[in-house]
Length: 349
Image (tube, rainbow, N blue to C red; front, top):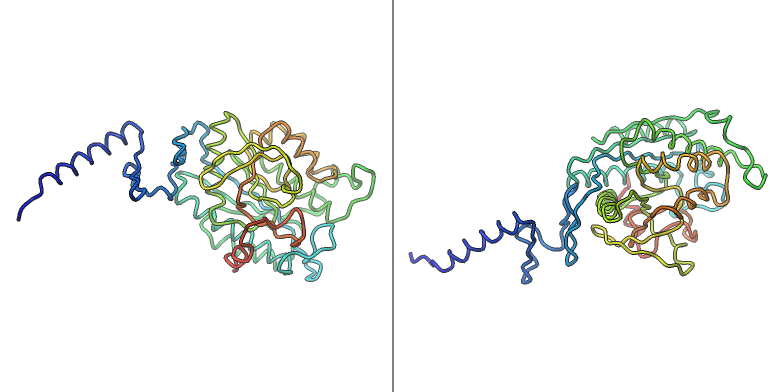
């Protein structure tokens, strides 16, 4: 059999060239099929390497100087024992999208986080993840359902039940205008305080505070980890990330700074609800702001958080990484250009 020496020589030279490029830190792309031989991946795959570099074609590499290895997710849970009232949102006479009992949203939220974490740790090397559920006033049956869901996953987790009189001495029963606030709002503030205080002992690096009605895309945690590393490295400072692309962000025209994440664009925003990711360092830095958010009812509830965003970067993804399952007409709810039904069905238990 005749051997094509010319072809073999070309193949040998190509292998040597790829090895040299890999050693020097360069990437090459075959424009014929968009294969990247130095990474052994195609251009439409995730090309970034956790704790090392972020790669976006055709923008090139960003060296990661702000490395992430630890993430604590704190889910604030509140489920009503009354089936009818459980469909109604906090301090609002409106039902949620799909009109299910509140426990259904809580379970799908936690399930979506578990699936997203499991997906992330396959690619984000050495990422330690834990989930803490802080629950206030849920029935024994609902608590059991939450525990069963957590126990069926290999993600490290635990559930903490709040005492009814916890933080009673520091939570003001009147808002900043002097009006009385509801028991449901006091419960919400109690849970916020619990989450913030847990940061000191339960969190090593990043903390993700989540309300129990945010259903996440499978790629949410991975994208947030890659985006945090890349953008923090570019800016040289810690940041805030919100997983939701809220409809109210489009109600007015505002200037925004745009960043490229792993598979999403991220834009700077000045407002979010109380579901966000940041570092323990940032929580400690703005400790008094977070304590005030849990002890005095402001208007809006997130007022102190928005004051932080005047000083620090907060970024929101386009398109969204999570669906806030509120009323379909809510400006603070379901994201635009998002497959709401698929997200809901994908997390059915």
